[in-house]
Length: 153
Image (tube, rainbow, N blue to C red; front, side, top):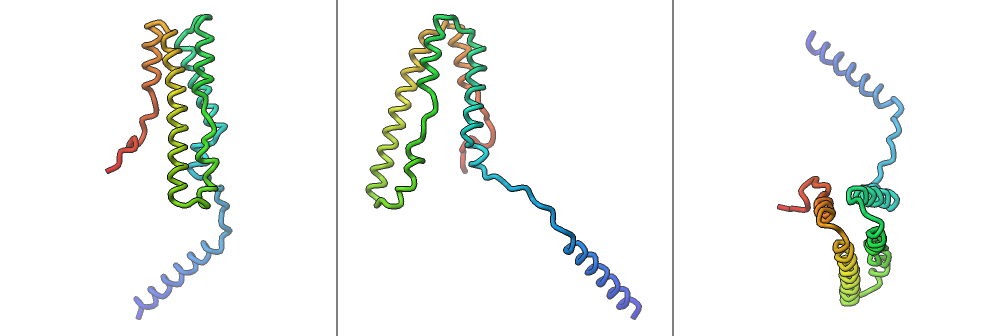
């Protein structure tokens, strides 16, 4: 009988502690931002790009003659508005073949943009000295190698 009484007292004590914890006001949790909001914030992205370009510019130690090639290169590699993302809402209204055609158009536009960037890169690279080319090569290899680098499996 003594064990039963102790068990009841312990049980009631635990219930009262639990109910007191439930009655305490809940702390407000900060609003969580999604991954896309933090990772692809256009302002932060522009800041990262500007910082990286400035670091490369300082490392290359460009001459006055090379500055024009640098400006042309930066203009050519500037991020563009992604047409596919802007037109995403209209995809729901299209049928399967029309969506496939749109995707092909977007893909061709991306390839054309990459070709423009490559031409600008070749022009700028030709204006660099061999030492500067080596610095540029090292800089272009660097990157954030976090996670699995999209290796699945």
